[in-house]
Amino acid sequence: MHRIVVLAVPIFVFLMGCEWLYGWLKQRNTYRLEDSISSLGQGLLSQGLAVCTQLFQIGIYAMVFPLIALWPKPAFWDSAMGWIVAILLFDFCDYWLHRAGHEVAVLWAAHSVHHQSQRFNFSTALRQESMVAFLGWPFYLPMALIGVPPEQFGIAGLVVLVYQFWIHTEHIGKLGMFDRIFSSPSNHRVHHAVNDGYVDRNYGGMLVIWDRMFGTFKEESEPCIYGTRKQLDSWSPLRAVLGPYAPLLRDAWHTRRWSDKLRVCFKAPGWRPADVAARFPEGDFSIDAVRMYEPETSKAQRLSIGLQFVLWTGVLLAFLWQADELAFGVSALLLGLGTAGLWVIGKVADGRWSLVWAWCLQAVLLAGASYLLV
Image 1: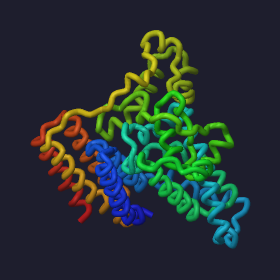
Image 2: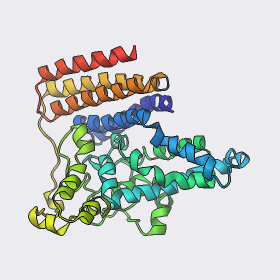
Image 3: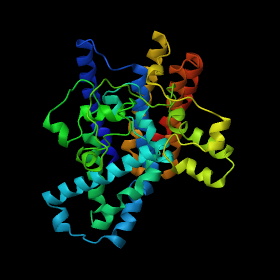
Image 4: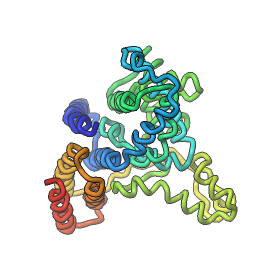
């Protein structure tokens, strides 16, 4: 499975290049180097973490399947209809996980990584969450109960995930009847927007029918403002992944009632205990106050972070290609080195580190990773 991801990378890069070229020709470029590197880095980290967390990716599903499967009929599941049903079931379960990711604070902290970019393009599609796997696996167990084989479950998930790549673009308008049935660029732009009328809408991965059935559909009717209501304002991968948990931990620490310490995690995002809200008030969100995070960077900084990212992309893709043959300890160490390397890139992009210091540290990190891969 990891090698499929590696083989797909050139296709993704080609399509991103086409989108950038089209935007440049139309004088409507939706890309910024630092933002795209940040998004692509999150995608690489999520795949690296998947290597080290097979138990949560598919392991629990595979262990539970023989114990609870009600209809494990190979003849059906191997048929064309069986594949269609498996994909539809995955998309249905994914709708509820996705919806919970917006309606439960601790799940939103994990899922919000995918929404942090203030730009909307193909690179945003690859900005995948790393922590959702630890929390989201129970949502797919109904598929095991029905009888979808583990291998088919994994491939169905890959189909639903890959489908969603093309719907992350501003360059495709409304598509008529297609928009009424399927997730489309127009429908998904609404999902990524922070506009008052758009928040928490259009969760469907492949089909928007689920949103129409369960009352979460919203048609695109005004320009979208992208990102999260609590802006990240950083290109750091660690801050992107871990930062959303900080407000939950802070409120849970300061609130006096033990029940509220739990509610902080399981109530809707933005909910705060009354005593904490009184002591540490926060202003209301205003769409007019949203500003793009665009720190100034020099040509040398952009060249450096671009080159460093290319080097780490090569290392992390080599890691994914060899993943099945590597010991867990080696995989974990490679993931740690890759995370550190992308963190350094983020520091340079944020203007917090000098190029000399960054390159010195990168040389050490890259040498260590290369040694482990040889």
